[in-house]
Amino acid sequence: MATGKVLRRAVKAAAAGMIHYSGMRRAMAAYRRSQSGGRRILIVSYHRVVSDFTGELQRSIPGLLISQETFRRHLEEAHAAGFELASIGDAVDVMNGRRVAKKDLCVVTFDDGYRDVYRYAYPVLKEMGVPAITYLPTAFISTDKRFNHDRLFHLLRRVQERRFRPFYDSLPAPALQLLGPILSGQKTVSASLDDFIGEHPTRVLTEIIDALEQQLGGGADLVPEQGDIMNWDEVRRMARDGFEFGAHTLGHTVLTLEPQDVVEREILESKRAIEREVGITVRDFAYCNGWYSDEVIRVLSANGFRSGVTTEDMPNRIGGDPFTLKRKVLWENFSLGMLGDYSSALTGCQLDDCFGVLGMSSPVPGKRPHFISAPTVGNQLSSAPVRVSPKPATSNELVVGPETATTLQEAP
Image (cartoon, rainbow, N blue to C red; front, side):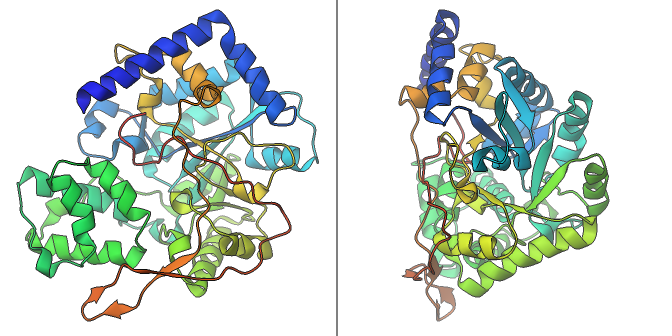
């Protein structure tokens, strides 16, 4: 597995060098600009900006991390590539034809409201005069809670470290789907967790967390120290400096796996909480896991939102649907060259989507049919999905596209 990662990195780094220094990169950027309707609208997504990437890598989901220095370089690379670093509102206005952009636009976004963003990204953004929006799952703000994906990652690493063999009879039935590939060596913790979270609703995740903690004997070491979330004072301070905030549900919930009443509550209460605490109008939304449906878009459109961002790594097109905005999810390793050091050529090729033009990415669509979980059977939750017929979509045409990499991925 490690040899394969090194080989893929070497191939991409070599291709990036050739594209960058031959002038092909400029031609590919022009091609994407033409495809997009005359202006490129690049939306980049981050999660955690950290001071010590190597140290944090030992205890956190790799695909959520980027070092402060690499993050700064990404902003510099975007500017050098000819992008104007703009707000999400500017991007929507250009897409809708309300504004004509003189340059291609790059919008910086953060999901989840990790305190690392306040500590290490906010000072860089403020110093460089770069706008950004952070999407908040509001039930976590000003609490010591950790996200289910971080808690499960931490627990699964503890299972590995202790060489613990779980008692599946006392775990929720879907736990085997998560643990089996990890303990058999078929998947990394991140890969198995990423697949699992996309298929099971929040209540299944919390059931497995509770059961695993009980089997491991409890204790403070079963809750991750890292991954703490901003408080409202920190959010308000950033807002006073002009940084924007959008909604990201209450409990970091994948909405396509939930019934209509949960969808509406998660969207509306998260919006109201930010507006109440920060004194701003919330008009923008980020889909958890990047997944959305016609029903979710209907709720957003009916309740004053102007945009919804996915994790589909495709070009945004002038005239496209603002509720299916495409984003490129970035982390540290997307900039690592052949020798494991920062590569300006590779980063530039990522931002200009050269690998997408060449068909070297593995796209995954974000639009999903709307499912909910089957009712509880006995003491365990059934994982069998039940389709929910969506209500009519908005008048905007849905433009569905792929993503290059999901947020929990371990290698580019």
